[in-house]
Length: 174
Image (cartoon, rainbow, N blue to C red; front, top):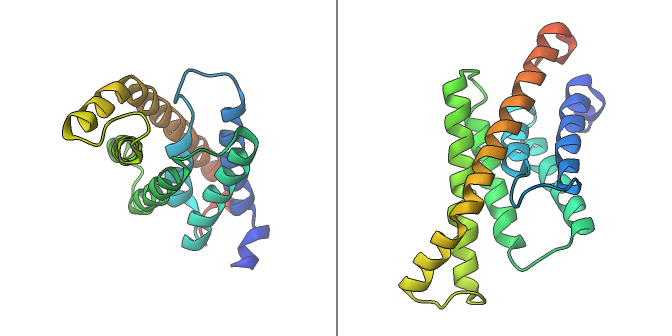
């Protein structure tokens, strides 16, 4: 695993993930940040599956340490790990339709899991079926921002890396 850390492919992928994570520090509309895009990209492009999970989650922990942790963090990170798994499923394809489907699935997974946890925490919504529905309905505007941001950032990151890989063969998988 450690021998991969000095390879150009690892350095470029990691740099792209860090740059995407830094978007979180720039003023943006609520939930318009490349959160799922980071996880999808790491899952799709890191050659080492362990690094695909470790690096994106580590970058998220570091940025969250600056931004601030909150009670939803456990479910955010759990969702994040599942999204890396979706990225792993996308490894064998560059078809735009599959990348779009993977991004939509990632954003939807994040929406479903984190909002269920929001309801389950019982802080903002009563723990009733009506409270659950209210929670999901209230989150729909945030879902659209998440969906658009993840789709945009994941496609841009993927296209950029594919371009760089075609231009610089050293970035191709061994």
